[in-house]
Image (cartoon, rainbow, N blue to C red):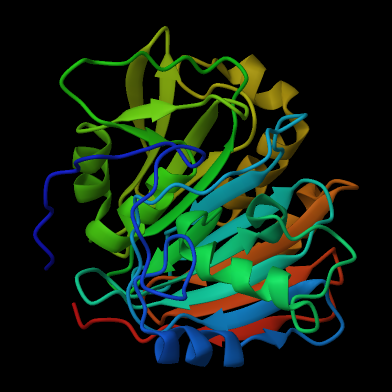
Length: 331
């Protein structure tokens, strides 16, 4: 188990920077050869707007990277079905503009290996620009570890986020500040469980500037899960029951049955999860994701924290499921 170090000198994604290795921009702490190996691994996922890449070498997880502000809130539907011991599945729709996206594998020397998905618009790669043919866009991918929108590490921790317009996070003077997407990278690299991820969150301030307030669904292969929200400046944690947990875009903490039922996506997921007592195959999880998809669902993904399997569907092409695998550490 990785021992969590203190979080120091954190910055929000658009602030601060440390000097990179010679010839390599941004967050990279790679040698030039490692950067070249990383970019040589870039592939387009056939028939999609998505790419995959294996990051070779180290990076500064706290480096600054300029990102454009969000003009509207992220959508998103997430759930964790953990009714079958040893066969849990975490599922998520990312509902946002149809930007290019990247399935990224990282294995930092002082952190956990992980697989995650990055919206490349936030690295400055807009729709219509192909990083396979555009050298400037391709070099921007060396900053990709900094902005995971969801992901799973080799300890079985899975993390994802959704917009919560009611969220308000206050700052404490004795804590460093980190961006609200960047914190997912810290959790993937440094935490092995939901409890360790929560402990990390307790040591930082989250900065929602430049984007909508967020809340998070955290889960691990023990079956534990937690939704983390920010209510009147205070962090509130809602633990999942032994069978499932779900999250969309309303504040879960304090919500009554009527509020939960009024949200179509949450109610649909809850009905499916309750009916099956939280026992869903990967195929059934995608059925639920399809039922709650919106017109702007950019990607749909399932993570299986026991096997390390990851399956991705791009832009609701449900017949085309793309598989990736992460080698998991033994329990």
